[in-house]
Length: 452
Figure 1 (tube, rainbow, N blue to C red):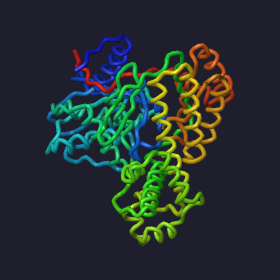
Figure 2: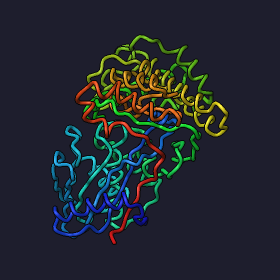
Figure 3: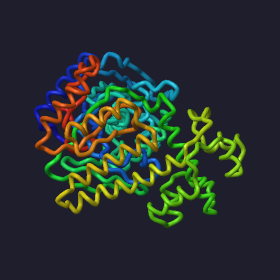
């Protein structure tokens, strides 16, 4: 268990403690904290089985908690727009058609309960607070799931390792309908202050990545919100990658029925990422694939496509861009490894090389994966013109934030230029600017704080 040391953290928790006491008429027993994250490079490839390179940020989700034998879980939020919610410990239900904040919390509760095979749970009163902007691409929803998982573990006195917590929370967030790959939950638990992490999967592991001196990372919110669980954009990309995997496997004479991820296909073929890109060029065509063409190639019926391959919220899809999605995934996976190699070798022009990789990543997200939006593209261009050596969307996209690599000596002029050119001309953006543009450093992972 960690103790509170820094004044700023203590101040925030004192405010949360008072909100808890005002709501429930008692003092909390403990606090839980799970940080958000910024992904430096490696977008939309964790669910394809490939390594990613995020770091935790200072913004986080906090919960104050007391435990009782009430057989209920009472949830409240310091933000009034998030309404109170109470549920019996024996009647936890998650409505994926209505992705409200409390259902994300209950994903974490249910995930830990199922992992530990608990027949019943301790009753809890929880007050939740957070400093991660919602739907910003900085993993506010996953941090909430992780915080809830940590709360449930502590309330029921069942210690689990960080790796187990990360893997469990990655699985249980899918209860809300989002088919993510585990990056957000992994960095939330495995982060360490002062270092980014290369996160690899199957098995889950995290390796320190020392970022170069002489540059800082700046997060800027384009002020367009996108809730992954409330739209089909995210899951559509998962499905397109799944179909591309099967189509490529079929072309190579493999048993495609059990292959779901582009990364698994590479392992099966035992070839390089460059060779996988060559295979994409050879087998897949740039024009969108129809349902009929996919079914004919795989030798399956439309019913089998819908039942075995499409997700619940992509049943309506008729066209699938397999070539573009596969090209992005294999190219982005290579860029992650190149990014880490530059950080490890630390050449004199490391900052320039890393910036170039970030720029190429954004171009691929924009043109091949089509997960950007006009505001993100405008903000990336603004950041580059303001002095960033590299800038890209971070997170799922379709809104949210950019992350830019800025030489230290340019930081002040960079911030001023981005304010003047992106935020000030628009009244809504200007009102949000103070919480939308900030320098970030690698932060620590999720933790429990015992009330003293």
